[in-house]
Image (cartoon, rainbow, N blue to C red; front, side, top):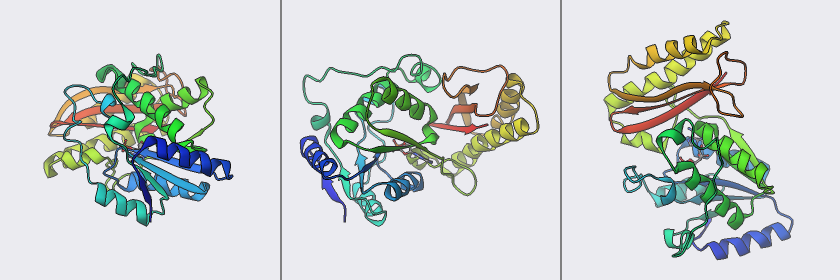
Length: 281
Ligand code: AMP
């Protein structure tokens, strides 16, 4: 049975003690409403560490004013049971006032990587992500921290933060878990109606087709992107494509000629739901 800890001070003291006793700690940060994508991270953490800590915290500072913070899906009891079944040792589940007490004013900015792709459409988002993850690292003292490549830009930004700030933690990137029909799992899929979900399938379909074309020898980015967009735009309830880019994995800057290891990323609105997905070439 996982132990639930709500206070950061208590969590930090416990983590320091566990590390002092020689344990490795595997950490999986989440915003809850857990699904198979989260579970895959927990399973990898379970295999590689003595202790597994999952955090469940819907981080207010990474949401914009008109974003879905208030309606973000939450179900702690369900999450608790998933953690129990996956062999989690501790669930860190703090209140906002514990994480951001009055007077809070320190933020982490990973320059250059945070203002492209999603960052261009969600100003301040990655500043909020980097800040909360650094706080969580200081509280949980992980040996290894597990992140999904579903949120590829986030994964890269956090890798950069850890390198730049000499943080003693290894960032482990884990593959995107998909539904059998290709849709990348996400807590936000809950917002989709059945018709919207059918439209959302065109996202992964288009990414798979781009990878296929690349594997067959097409490397011109513009051509690959056009091919992807042509498929995506067949989705009846597609409202907006915010970006569709092929970028270098380290700089996140667009490339002219795609090469192995580059990443195709997209963010779209299906109805009122913003969905992201990507594929590595
Ligand atoms: P979230 O709760 O959405 O903030 O996600 C918590 C962690 O789970 C992040 O590292 C995500 O990248 C990861 N994650 C979310 N969805 C998936 C997925 N479909 N496959 C793999 N990892 C995922």
